[in-house]
Image 1 (cartoon, rainbow, N blue to C red):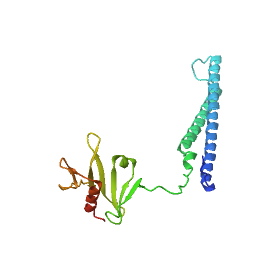
Image 2 (image 1 turned 90 degrees about the vertical axis):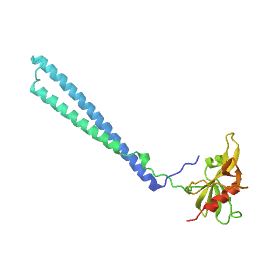
Image 3 (image 1 turned 30 degrees about the vertical axis):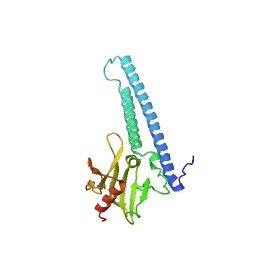
Image 4 (image 1 turned 90 degrees about the horizontal axis):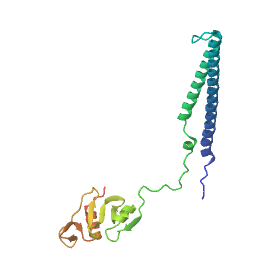
Length: 214
């Protein structure tokens, strides 16, 4: 499978972002280790202070001044390490991932917004510029066609299913979505379905007659 290769200019932001991510991760790891060491020093100072109280018979009172100073320094070191760790974690969380900075490779040809699956030229029946389109598989499955004149939407015609799943007449709608009904006569499907046209050609001609190009 061919892999798209990014040009050098496109690779530079990604490489810079990966290097910066590595630096931040290293800083977070160092701050985490420093916080762990500070916590260990605080724990040792607490145990030393408790032992000093026991040896001096101070009971549950305050530890000796020297031990109290060590305990306060250990607590201050731990607080500073925790603040630095929290700062680095916040900074790392705000940074976009390296993958987000990689620009997408340029497409050689962007797809059209409405590239049709099927196109029927009706110039020989309606005149120049008239075409029928099916844009999606849903159009194809529903036997729905979009009529356009010089690119302007004129309306749609659809081959209708009855309750037994059989194709009957054709519905016609103008560009605004209003249903176009046939007059009684050969173009109508049958009296019991007065809103349907007998053939696609008749439905298409009805939509074309109702269309007004902008």
